[in-house]
Length: 250
Image (cartoon, rainbow, N blue to C red; front, top):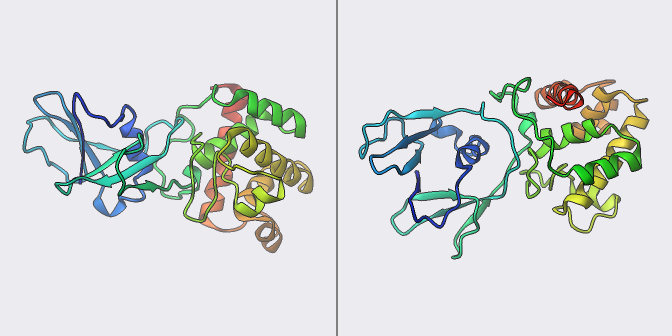
């Protein structure tokens, strides 16, 4: 598999390295994504280590330590020569699929340094502040949850069907009257409303609220605290780290 960027490419891939990070779970069996630049200045991305037949440049593996940022949907398609492409611009032709994202902070094997990864302090400020004020939730917590759930990708969809910025399950979205879970305002309003209810239920305990947001209230009740699921344990820890950092603004 290769991803090519030519000087006249119609595929806008200015943040393809970030896309490769998000696609890491999909390509885990490939052993990683490698980047190299040929003599013409064209950047190549491949899952074949040392695949530099057209260039003497040294390949550099892209790891999951890249900073999180707002992401668009990533589209995957195979061209007429059999080369697989990933792009964040919707192809004009058919035969493509939208690659699903998963909760960035839920991966126990994530190599992201959550104490240093880049924060997103600007996107959806109005939506977050409005909902945080309406439901009495710390806006830094809302931002931490958005970061943990979708890395600020409004089109994120998990393999379990969670949707949008705060990864609302269809039943949750319906409960809070959401008509379009991919609308930033609606998604953040419903997610914050749900989060406020969890905080009230657990007397302001952010760890339990985060655990319930991830694993469900039933799981928290069953185990009398944070469930012993690897995904939930790292999620709670990382939300806590992000919360403190968003509160401090750094």
